Structures are given as C-alpha cells and as structure tokens.
Amino acid sequence: MQTVQKLPSSLEGLKKPVEQLYYRGDLSLLEMPLISIVGTRKPNSYTKDMTYTLSKKLSQAGYVIVSGAAMGVDAIAHQGAFPRTIAVMANSLDIYYPAVNRSLIEKLSKSSLILSEYSPTTKATRYSFVHRNRIVVALGQILIITQADLESGSLRSFEYAKAMGKEVYVLSHRIGESRGTQMLVESGEAKLITDLNRFLEEIGAVQEKSEIAEEDFLSTPKPLKEALKHFGPKLYEMELEGIVEIKDLKVRRL
Image (cartoon, rainbow, N blue to C red; front, side, top):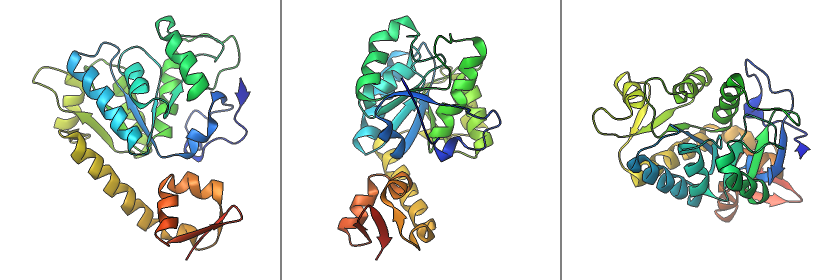
C-alpha cells in the first residue's frame, strides 16, 4: 500500500476534502479518461448484462471505469472493464470488503487500481460508503447509473454529480423498474441511454468538443504527463495527425 503523492485535480475543491489517498496497482490509470458507473447491489438480469457490456465497450473505446467495488453493479462494471478500471474502497486497503468480492478486489489491486482515503485497519462504516461515493463521482468525466430504486444510495451519487456539474446518464428500463433512475429522466436531470453504440458516439463527440474548447491548453508546451492527463490516449492520435509534437517528454501544438 502506497500513498498518492499528488491528488488528481478532479478531487480538489471537494466539500469534504481528501486528505490522503492510498493505492495499490497501476496509478497511471488515473491519467486516462475516466467514467464513473454505479447502481444497485441487486441488479436484475437485464441490468447485469447491460452494465457488463457497456463497461466493456467503454474500456475498449479507451475509457477507464471507476466504481466502488460493492456487490451488484459495481462489481459487474469492474469485471466488464478489466483491467481498465479503478475501485474506490469504503475501508482501508488491508481489508477486503465485501468479503464476497475478495477475489475481485485482489485481482484489481494487481492488474488495475484500488484507492482509499482511509489509513490501515479502518473498517467500513455507514458514512464511509457515502464519502467513498463522492470520490467515485469526482474522478469520472460523467456518471452512469445503470439501475437504482427510489431509496437507492446511488441517488446520493447523483446528488454529488449534480453539485459538481457533471452529466448523468441512465439505462432505459421497463415501466415500474429502476424507479429512481426513471425519476431522474422524467425530471430532466439525467440523459437516457437507449442504444449503446449511439451513446459511445455521443460521448466521443462530447470529448472532441471539449478538446476544441481547450485549444488554449497547448498554447505553451506542456509536460507529457500533464498533457496525457488532459487528453488521454487521444493525445497520440493528435500526434499522428500532425496536430501536436511530442519531444523530450514535452508536448507542443504544431
């Protein structure tokens, strides 16, 4: 277990600050484009299939999936995106909780990344799950809730995303199912995913617009690590297209 020396910029300014962040695994995953996925601990068969497929498609498209290593949707999201996934724990990293996910958490700690703000021997509490969720949401560019009832803790994650100004997406469900996410759609506070391929095209377009809006970022040369954090894998595509030059661990716009 090691301590992250420099916190991701996305964790700065949180109402409850992250004082320290412990990790095991591949810390470079934090420098990639991140998307948060959360949901119920008791997903139906449709949600299980769609969460796994969506996570896998996103990871194949170059995104890293962030979730909370809980039973249900969290675990499925990690499995679908493996090894491009990050688990944020509600306890210290020397404790495997929930026990049913022990083998998954061990796997993530070796080939992916697990994070915690809690020092050794700290057990999960009712409040640590809520605090964990703020980190899960803060790390992602957007939040996807694949299933949640009206009393689901995932709706607290929505509140975090709303306060942070992040877009929230949910899966389409049958009438009477996942009433929490359906409520978000009805109130206009979440966007509906009805086609996975179209959704992937949509967030790809959003990413391109973001890059155009941030054109000034490379008005002066930037360290390669900082540029990767900003653009993710797209940076190397930009190099091949002759948009930028990468030389001596520096990136400049051509």
